[in-house]
Length: 149
Image (cartoon, rainbow, N blue to C red):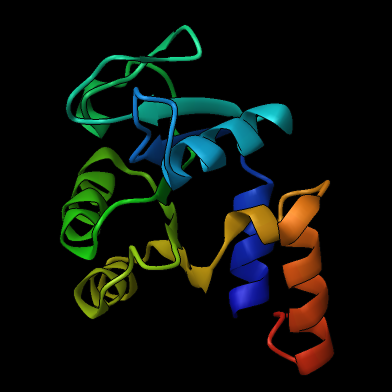
């Protein structure tokens, strides 16, 4: 059930965000900063490396030396398909495929390998406190019945 997967993911502490740009722009950066502001231990990942807000960007999940409880993908679907395989290999059991980063292959892989996942949802509509446009978006989704209960 999607709402249970959302609750489980939001209860995690150590989150890797795949797709964080060192240029300080883009949706991956927004997700990274949003989660940091909500006191998650966030590990930014980008294959090109670099730094974001003074923190080193890891180049892959496999290069992370700290515990990862869950992953948020903010990358093209073909990249998410690689990430879910790395997650399985590393024993990571929770993945949030940000809207637009999911694919049927990635979803099927998670189902086949007992990886709990969320797809088709924006994490910034769920991780409290929700503010700005995400709060407005969440309200609209609740009104029209698209918000998972």
